[in-house]
Image (cartoon, rainbow, N blue to C red):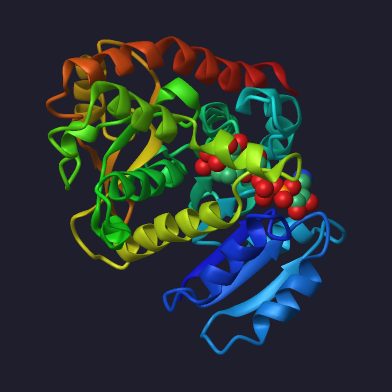
Length: 333
Ligand code: NAD
Ligand code: LMR
């Protein structure tokens, strides 16, 4: 029996993500929480002929607690999205408080649940969740994840486009490490399962890196004020959740890049800090997942000189983003 909960379930990501979770046969109960519209979304999804029992909750009458009771996995896409001209960090003002309050609900109601954070800025909202859990004495770094899967999905797609064969997209894998914003998104294209064409010019290579790093902006621009990626994010969020659920069921060798606290596994976390040459508290790296969450954080491995520079360039922004999330909870009541 697996209970999955979506917080922000009526939103642009929340609705299609809830749809995809409803179609996951491993989910037996699906609770949808939002400040609006969840009864309708839940009624609609509940007619789909799959095992999950669906229920919608709103804030009145302790709706958040009721939604979270007995949760195994909680996915958080609640919060405002970007408009053209904004950075993810510009969302901090509004989303930090939303994520803090939802994390407080999880810490007090379902402290053992796996928490999958989608709300931006991920580099700061993950530390916010962790700090709230620390305050409540229930912090387990193995169970809190920043969802960076969309960067992995984009890499697969864009690389297969460069290879001239979109049918390869589902099988192309590129580790994407660092964080989830602009220069902190580091695609390790030298480790792509499908090597890039040997005659690809340096200009085209760098344009591909930029496209992966700023893929979010492409969607924000195209939506022209109506929000950011929702459908591709729902797909990515459902893929990552499915990996967590398979690992919980005991499947071995499941690895996915995700933004985690590097104390989740001390030995491999310390080794990664050495590799990047910086004592960062959080980093996105390929993580092996198991029934208790993080099993081990895989090394980045051999990097090209270009990739080493990308890591160097990411560190200052990561450090600032992480510190902003940590001190937000330190300073909030
Ligand atoms: P949206 O505005 O369409 O939906 C957000 C939902 O959150 C709304 O239904 C809203 O009612 C709800 N909400 C607001 N405050 C809430 C609260 N206190 N409790 C519960 N629900 C609340 O936005 P969206 O397009 O779905 O994006 C949501 C977030 O996901 C944004 O912060 C966006 O930047 C982020 N995002 C992250 C990634 C990623 O790769 N991690 C990708 C895309 C979007
Ligand atoms: C994305 O990568 O699409 C998301 O983080 C949303 C955004 O603001 O770009």
